[in-house]
Every structure is written in C-alpha cells, then in structure tokens.
Image 1 (cartoon, protein in one colour):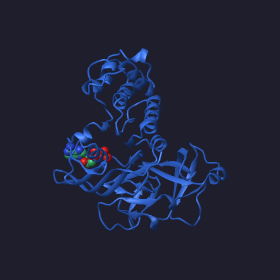
Image 2 (image 1 turned 45 degrees about the vertical axis):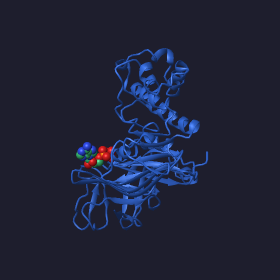
Image 3 (image 1 turned 180 degrees about the vertical axis):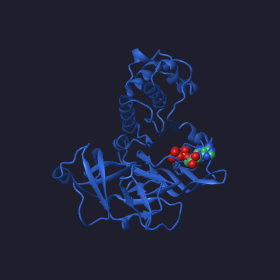
Image 4 (image 1 turned 135 degrees about the horizontal axis):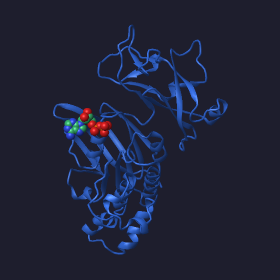
Length: 343
Ligand code: ADP
C-alpha cells in the first residue's frame, strides 16, 4: 500500500495541567496507513498526546488537523472514525458477544451480525464457540483486552490508537494484538498509533517511530534517551547504572539547563566484546535483550539493557555474525561523552 496521504498534522501543540506544561510539539505528521510506535519514559506525555489525537482532550494551545481539516473534540467527523484503546479496557457488564455487538447496534448496522462477530473474535485469536457467550468477568486480563480490541476492529475505524495495549497481558495476547493491528492496516488501510514500553513488541508492529521525553518529540527513533536521575559528580554529571558501590556509570557532558534530557544518537554507539584501553570514555556492560531485522534497511535493530537503561542500536548483519551477537549475550557499549547531547 502506498503511504502518501497525511492523516494527522499537529501544529504548535502545547498542553498544560494546571500551570505544568506536559506537552510541547511544534509539528508532527502521521501518514495514512502507517503504524507509528510511540516510546518514552513514564510521565513524558504519551497518553496526553494520544488523547489529543483521539480528540478526547482539547490541547491548551495549537491545532490538530485530521484528513486535511482542522478538527475538534466531539466533531462528528472524528467520533466514528477514530478509536482509542487503553491499558485497562472498559468492558460492559455483559457477554463477550454483546460487548462486541454494542458499537454496531448503536449504528444500527446489524446485517450479518453473527458472522461479523465470529470474524472479529477470530481476528484476535478467540474461538467464537468458547468465548462469545462468556461474561465479562470470566476473562483473563489478556482475553479482556482482546475482546476490547475486537469491539473496536469490528467498526473498521480509520484510526486505531492504542495506549500501552500489552502492558498487562500475557505473551499470547500480545502476539494476537500485534497480528490484529497488522491485519487492520492490511485489510482497510487503518492508521495505527501505539504507545508501548515493550520495545521489541513495538518494533515488530511499527514502521515509524517517535520518541518523546519531557513532552517533546525527538525525531523518529534515531536517538536514545539516557533517562534521569543524573548525579552532579565531582567534575562532570553522571548517570549511575546501579545502586551498588561498584556500579558502572555514564560520563555526561556539562549541562546547560537543569531540566534537560541526555540523548545519544544510535549511530554514535559502538559495540565491542571487551573493554578497550583508549577510545571512548564511556564503556559500559550491557546485555542484549532482543534483535530484530529492520525491514526498511535490513540492519539488525538490537535492544541492550544496562541498569535502568535500554538502548537501541542498529548494525549490519555481518557485524552480528562476526561478534556472534545473540539475545542474552553480554557486550560492551562504547560511546564518547562529547557525543551525548542535552535537550
Ligand atoms: P505518559 O503517558 O508518557 O506516562 P502522561 O501523558 O500520562 O505521560 O503524563 C504527562 C504528565 O502529565 C505527567 O507528569 C503526569 O503526571 C501529568 N498528568 C497526566 N494526566 C494528568 C491530569 N489529568 N492532571 C494533572 N496532571 C496530569
């Protein structure tokens, strides 16, 4: 499918809760039929941004354009086309069948109901025979999330917004939610925006990535955030990677402002199997947690954990082969403190 039309355009969006600014986005575009993965630390503004894009929250300032028109909360043009699914879905205190049929009943769109509910259940991996007549309280967390997803997919929304959809579900449900999202894009060109902490899961679903920190967008997945807290250190700021006395730390460059985030570009991080005498002043031990082929460039997108840090790096397949890189392997991440930026 060719992705050229713009679904969303956000201009100069700011949002405040009281006098606290939590979102400050100068400009953002989302293409029709794209699947955008939104990542960022807790409290960085992801949910607020998703609510604004679902037209469930009016931003304090700025404009949200949808399908080439400036739109507003409660506009009938957006209400039937955009749907939001959150981490803890709300189900009606009724059967699975009634929950999924509810949206269609409201629209008086009841043709072929039984078959459509069957298909919707199937799309999230739930057997009609086993689940259709179950009550809302007879479902596991993952099954409830899949029913909520089916209840939205049956309406064939133009935009599906998922806020931490797999944060409290089992691995099988997470897989089914991913499969159903990809099928929605394939079948009717659904535009999908997903916020998730589960990076490997998110990277398998999405083709566009946005990272957000402190309410601001950091282009599209080319940077890694080194999250706070930061320590003042003796001569330079420091990020500790553990609480123990012998914990490793990252040396950070001098700070210009006190509320910034430390950021390093993906391509500035090198991998080695052993610490080296010279070169980078930062050499930290990490463990590979996932490796995925990036379809767009055929590189291997690798997630490495070190303390509370989760870094994404990408390299060509021959390097993975040469260093025998595999999930679970301990490696050394090397980068220079002067390549770290404050934002
Ligand atoms: P994320 O989804 O990335 O965790 P949120 O958008 O939920 O971030 O929150 C961004 C910031 O706004 C946080 O500091 C949070 O505490 C604050 N916040 C979120 N919702 C409200 C609210 N309804 N009232 C006041 N502050 C809020």
